[in-house]
Image (cartoon, rainbow, N blue to C red; front, side, top):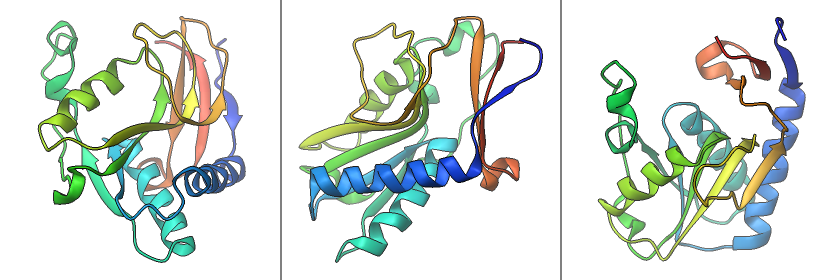
Length: 179
């Protein structure tokens, strides 16, 4: 596979985020303890969009946070380079809250494991759920998403790239060969 294949267009991404927001409302209702936490980087962008969608439909604004998990990764010392550290900003109200971690792609489960470990440094939520735009399989840990935008069957020699307007000047999800 030399050229990337589009597996989600901008219009499909927007519709998928609308559906995911509806699923969150359906499952969590008007949970006043709801906190969206985006995993840096593109998970933060998706979480912001979801917050906008939820805030338009719910009577009270949803709390929002961002989480950098790089120092919690179990493989960063094997990557050969120092991790790039982004900002973490977790609202004070996560103790006893319903927290939804938002990420762009669920693959091995290691990012989610690191996020769970990082969250515990800020308090103990009552419940933690996982929302991902793309679930591509190939789990190495027993982790699954509670909310999935799209499941994509991939080979281990492929990668999924989520492009967002905030960082990439376009919304699109691509499937391509690993470099």
